Length: 105
Image 1 (cartoon, rainbow, N blue to C red):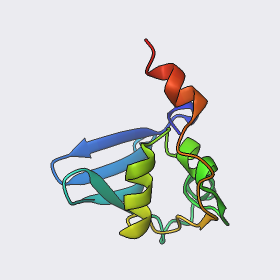
Image 2 (spheres, rainbow, N blue to C red; image 1 turned 120 degrees about the vertical axis):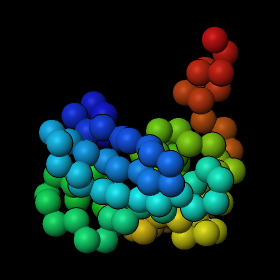
Image 3 (spheres, one colour; image 1 turned 45 degrees about the horizontal axis):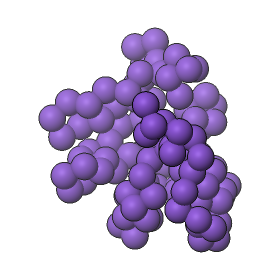
Image 4 (tube, rainbow, N blue to C red; image 1 turned 60 degrees about the horizontal axis):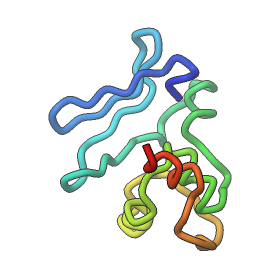
C-alpha cells in the first residue's frame, strides 16, 4: 500500500490509512497488538482495490499483509479481526522463503 502513496498512522488506540490527506480506512486497537479495520463502508475505488478481496489463499494474504507472522494471521482469522479477510483453504506450510531470508541479516 505504501508503494501506492498510502500512509498508515497509529495513534493511541486508533489506526488510519490515508492518501493525500484523505482518510480511506480507519481502525481501532483490538487487544494488545491487533487492529480491527473498518473497510465495509469504503466506496472509493482506489480504497476498495487496496482493502477488498473475493478470497485468496493463506499464503497470498500473508504476503498482502506484509508477511505478517503466521501465528498472528491465524489469530486474526480466529478473532475475525479484519472484515473481508476471506481465506481460502489452510496453509500448506508455515514457512515463507522471503521471511526466512529477511531474518538472516
